[in-house]
Image 1 (cartoon, one colour):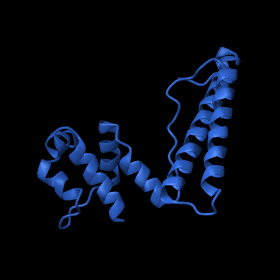
Image 2: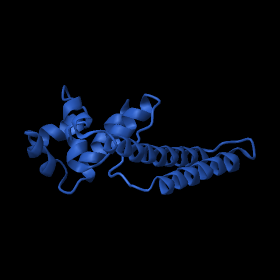
Image 3: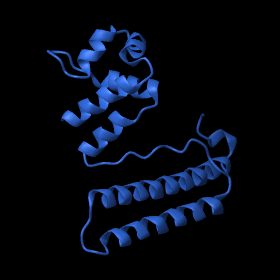
Length: 154
């Protein structure tokens, strides 16, 4: 589990101002936060604080490490909904093609290197994100087609 502590440590210490900047925003002293991200003594970084740190910094290292350790991948939610479904479909198809190409190129020699696996993972994530964006556009169209009284509250 040292990977998750490494992610937390680097999130805190790579942030401008490090623990001096982040700790007060969590209601902690910089020393306490520094001890928590190295698990010094009895100090432990809690889940609520990990979420707060990730949200404050925009840094997804803790989240991505947590997901990887659990055998999962994190997909960002679409930031906005695009009205052009055919452009979204084309983007999804293009990303699928790039994913297929990365798998074919990586597996061609019967050996998968760490770099090849990372590339396949990246292409898979990009394909899924494009598909998720298309799905969000379709869901928005569906919602817009409902009578106002039946639409979800924003």
